Length: 227
Image (cartoon, rainbow, N blue to C red; front, side):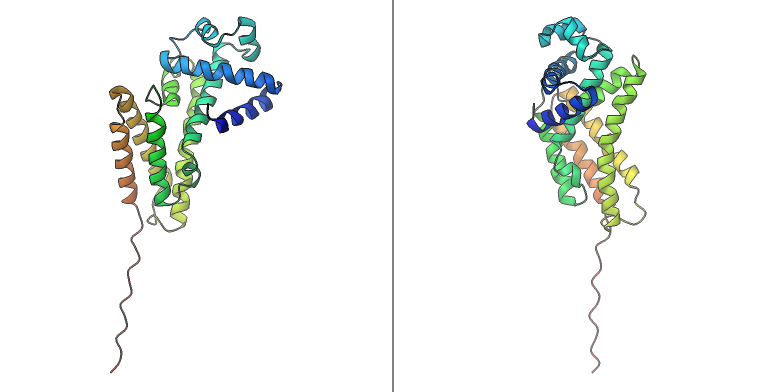
């Protein structure tokens, strides 16, 4: 696990559960290992016994850290995957207010997902599977998705304020379009086991975004000298 992600998760776990740093580290280890199992097999295809075996954890220990059982663990996995995905897009994700930052973000997204064995988006996969089985937990996962999209909208809002986008451009609509392209590209990338769909989707999204760029200022004509 990336150290920055691990440190962030440990701080959050310790604050929210009031357990010791050592306990938080153990819990984080379980979550990380369980996340890989769930990503490979799906929520429905991964039992608590599978998780216990895959994490070398006793039943009592598992329920100590996740009193609500599998639902609690899935919630922790969603939080972990969200932090890991967002961290992989930094520093560009926090400063999407220049064209250079958007190009850097595009490259960071492709590099991250092409380095993952599953290719697809773990947060989107969780949301899709949980909608029919655990609507409350699905809503929590959807909130992570919206938080992610919110970074895109925030950057576009700053670009609009800076005059980089045409007056009247809608940052929310633009961010939804880009995010939809991203998620669709990830789905096809997972299906085809290739980065090409994701690359094409993001390139098309950024081309559409540039179409909303403000017109460059016209040069004023030099004044003619009076003879």
